[in-house]
Length: 289
Image (cartoon, rainbow, N blue to C red; front, top):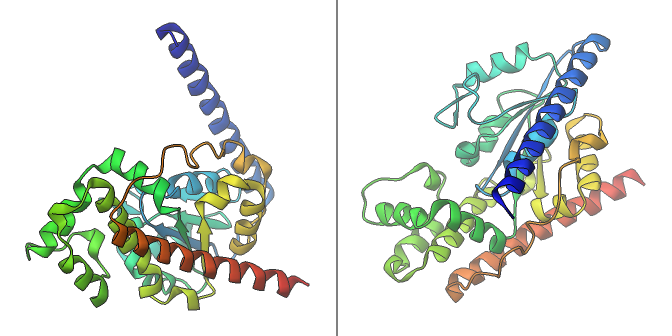
């Protein structure tokens, strides 16, 4: 592709995004003019591991005229990508004029039960992605940083936010590994495992107010997945919410070659997440019959 063609493509994309954003804002204004403010806004916390589609998910929800999305760089609700103090978040929710308000506090994924306690109607969405695609994305974005995080912890030099909520079993796992022998892909895989283990460390499979959402399933069937998600949140589904969702990221790159032990850990955890998600889906169908 020539530079001129690439420039033209970028201009069209930027123009299209600007028009879409204006349409989204127009719909929100229209909704607020024609609907009474809800008696209580539902706060929703999107959590999970980085590079799992959480930003895209929040943006899709934010296109709804009845949902406001607070990205993790929005200083009204976040500071250095952490949620602000509980009272600030309660005030943000109290003053919000929309049916649902979305927060994406990935750095707070270890304290979902505390977040749910902030408001009687709070809900959470735990988003996860198959580890192979997530590893490829994370290696491009973070390189060997996960290995540095584990190494610093193993040497007793401190625990970064990625290791908050670490279980005793996972701590023993990190200390048992020869980190110098691991590749960047292994480091990304181990981080995927540690962060998604938080779902079970907090026993969130027992909490009905937490929805387990597969990124892979979402991009493969965006209309079906978004309909189920908005039902869970108590909002309406609008087709334009998923207008830009595509599945081209699935298996885009070859599956990474991993340390067999770490790969088995990831396979087991992924199967466990899938089992919980599918069991909940079957139960929801049965309740509707």
